[in-house]
Image 1 (cartoon, rainbow, N blue to C red):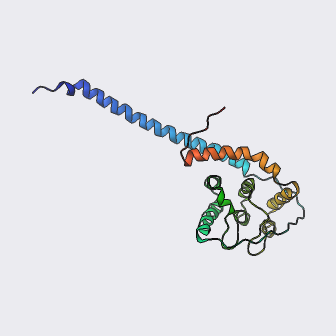
Image 2 (cartoon, rainbow, N blue to C red):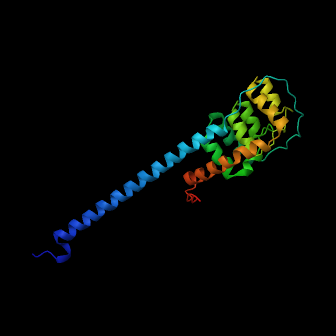
Image 3 (tube, one colour):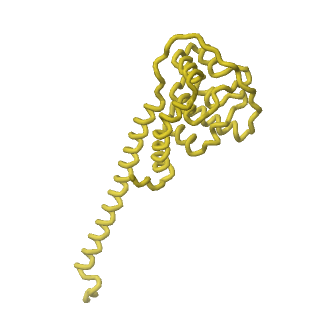
Length: 205
C-alpha cells in the first residue's frame, strides 16, 4: 500500500519538530515569567526594607492628645481587617503592602475593639508597617475603645523606637515623610500590580 504524500516521513518529521519547538517556546516563556516575577519580588523587598525602616530613637518624654472614638464596624469590615491584622502579625510585607495600595479604603477599617491597622501595627511592634501606613496617610491620632492612642500603646510596650518616631511626626508633621517616600511607594505599587494583577509594566521615559 502506498503512503499518501501528505503523510510521508518528511512531513511527519517537520510536524514533530514544530511541536517540539512550540513546547520549548512555552517552556521558556514560563521560565521567563517566573524569573521576572522573582526579580520584581526581590526589587520590591529591597525597596520595602527602606520604607519599613524607622530612624534610631532619641530618649525623651512625650505626650499626645487622644483623638475621637470610633464607631462599631460591620461584619464584612471586621473580616477584612482581621485578614489584614493576620498579615501584620505574620509580617507579610509584600502581600500586606499590595492589599493597602490596591484597595485604599482598607486603610479606614477598624475592628470590634476600635483598633485601626495602625493600632495593630503598634500592638504587634511592627514599626515598619506603622511607617508605611503613615505614608498612606492613615490617622495616627485616633484612639480605640479603651481610649488609648498609638503613643499610649508604644509607651506601655516600652517601644522606644516607635515613641521617638511619633514624637518626630508630632514635631515635624507628615509632609517630609510623604514627600520622601511616595515616589518609592508608587514604584512598588506598580511592580506589585505586575505580579498580582498581571498588568503591563510602564514604559520608561
